[in-house]
Length: 270
Image 1 (cartoon, rainbow, N blue to C red):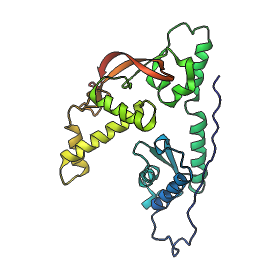
Image 2 (cartoon, helix red, strand yellow):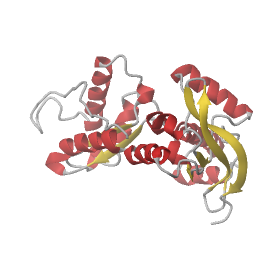
Image 3 (cartoon, rainbow, N blue to C red):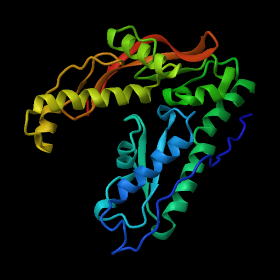
Image 4 (cartoon, rainbow, N blue to C red):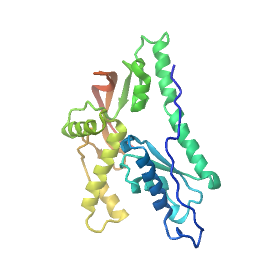
C-alpha cells in the first residue's frame, strides 16, 4: 500500500510592513516583493536544487493592476528559478495566502497518490499475471519511484521516453543526467521544446516582434528537431508527433520507462 506523504514548511520569508499609500513600498511592485521572498527562501535552503521545484503557488488578495495575470509564474521567473518551474495564482481575497498553502499541501500529499495505490494494488491482486496497459502519465516522473518495483512490466503509451535514439535526445539526456542525476521526463522534454519553439519563432519574427508576428512565425516553423523526434504543428495548432509504447524496467538501480516500439504519428487530424 502507498504511504501517505507529509507536507511540511521548511523555510519562510516575508516582506516588511509599511503604510499602504504613503509608506516606503508605495512605489514597489508586488511581484518584485514576492520575488524577493522566494530568493530569501532559496538562500535558507541551500540543499534544495531549484530544478526540483514543481510549482510556485502564489496567493493574490486583489488580482488587478500590477498583481494581475499569472503572478505565480511571473514571480518564479523573476526570482531566477529555472524556466521549467511552473507557477500558478490563486485568489480568495483576504485568505489567498492560506489558500495557496492549502493548495500546495494538497499537491504534495495527494497528487499521484491514486496512481501509486493503483499500481501497487494491481501487483498484489489476482490479475497481476495479466499485462497492464495504461496512459503514459500512470508511470511518468516521480510517481514511478513511489510505485517501486510494483510497476515493473507496466506498459504505457506516451510521446516521449529517454531511450529515443536521435541526436537531439542523446544530447538532451546527457545534459539532464549531468545536472540532475536522473533521466528526463516528458515534462522536461516539453519545457525544452517550448524554449526551442519560442527561440526559433522570435528569430523568424524579425526585429519588431508582436503577438501577430510571433504567432505567424510559429505557424511557419515546419519540422522541429526535438528529443521526442521530429514534429511540427498542424494547421489546427496541434503537434503532429510520434507516440511510443514503453515498459517499466530497471536501468541499474533506477526504474525507467524503456522504449518497446514506435506506434504511430498522430495529430494531423482535428
